Amino acid sequence: MKDDRTRIRRVDRAMPSEDAIEALLLEAQIGFIATCVEDQPFIHSNYFWYDKARRCIYFHTAIKGRTRDNIERNPRVCFSIAKAGRLLPAKTALEFSTEYAGVCAFGQAHIIEQEDEAEYALQGLLDKYFPDLKPGEDYRPITPEEISRTSVFAIEIEAWSGKEKFAIE
Image 1 (cartoon, one colour):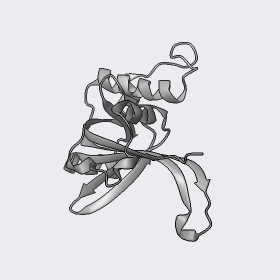
Image 2 (image 1 turned 180 degrees about the vertical axis):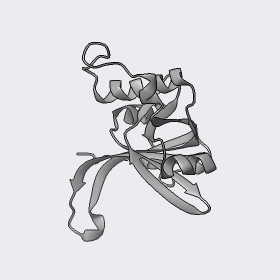
Image 3 (image 1 turned 90 degrees about the vertical axis):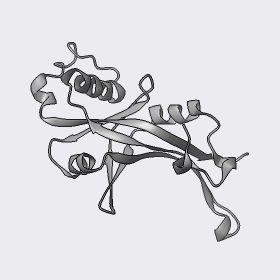
């Protein structure tokens, strides 16, 4: 899923496959959602869930707030995650470096209006961050009232790219 937005200058640092991009999206704990309204960019960090089967990213925010307002005004978003590796000292300041991996995805975000899809997205978040806990056993399942008290979003991914750098030992 590549287009002009995802061109990588250092092609030697491009992730080797879409599977590698998806693996990092599945592993990452926090994502950054960038919105833009009237030439003013905003960025919001949040927990998220990448649904590999649907190839979309789910997250939720307060029922009222800047993220929801911005997405209602302009659904185009950029989403990013990163993973830090080892720090790499060198003999000269210019040569200091780090290991890293990151993904940048572009797409359209929308508020999920259907209760069953919102429940699916929220349950996916719970399953990601609390995989050992089961609804109906360890906690009361999500209720319609709880769904009505939050804004649940899906980002339909249009394009993405991944970059990584790991030192060879």
